[in-house]
Amino acid sequence: MFTKLTAKQQPQVAAAINTLTAFLAMRDVPTLTSTAIQTRLGQPLDTLILFGGSPIAGLEHFVRAMRAGVAQHYMIAGGHGHTTPKLRAQLSQFSGLDLSQVSSEAEMFQRVAQVRYGQEIPLLETQSTNSGNNVTNSLAVLRRHDIVPTNIGLIQDGSMQRRLAAGFSKEVPAVPLVNFAAYQISVVVRDGQLAFAHDEVGMWSLSDYVNLVMGEIPRLHDTSAGYGPAGTGYIAHVAVPADVLAAYRLLQEQLSVTTRVANAEFKTISEN
Image (tube, rainbow, N blue to C red; front, side):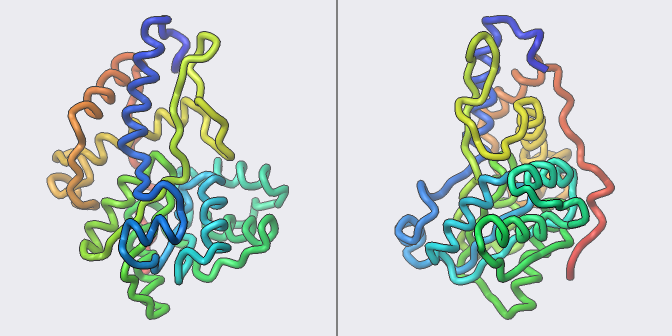
């Protein structure tokens, strides 16, 4: 993807990727602590949910929050989707566990939390196949447990955090959200190549990450081809800033990347 970039193009591409990241990887609080959340909301956090598309860094933030008693209720949500095979490989390598027979992302995270951190997860949602399912199925699990959250904390992969928030804003618009992307990472030019500025546990390859962030922009942009009210209606309206759209177009031109399309295989399962 990056081999044909000139020395002049490399910093331009790095800056464009970082523009997309800054827009997508939302964090409403600087740290996932009770103090930061109280400052943000004016009240304690009710429910914290980790989503299966997140890398290992998300699980680490989630477990630390549980140990600190940041929220009243805790859930991991995630069935099987396009990121599941890579997540399984990352979690297996990280934990040393054989997760080959564990079908859902939530159950994989649960196993690792139990063995690696000695932490039990109270609530699991295991049927989701896409970000829309993540939202509706998670809310269904809460209802089944008679939980009516006054606010919800969300931990998701940095590339998908904004879309997840827009999904919750559509389904429960009156419920305040606290976004905490699993990672915020920037791209730099190092030794004549594009690279991540720092290491992140279980992070995607740079090319996979660029494909993910670029795939989010047409989904979020509220046009007839997007996921917003003007399109499929999966999410609430998102205003994509002009500089983000410009960065997306630059990456399309410089990298000749075809935007990742939704996989129909992961559109069918839902939990009522």
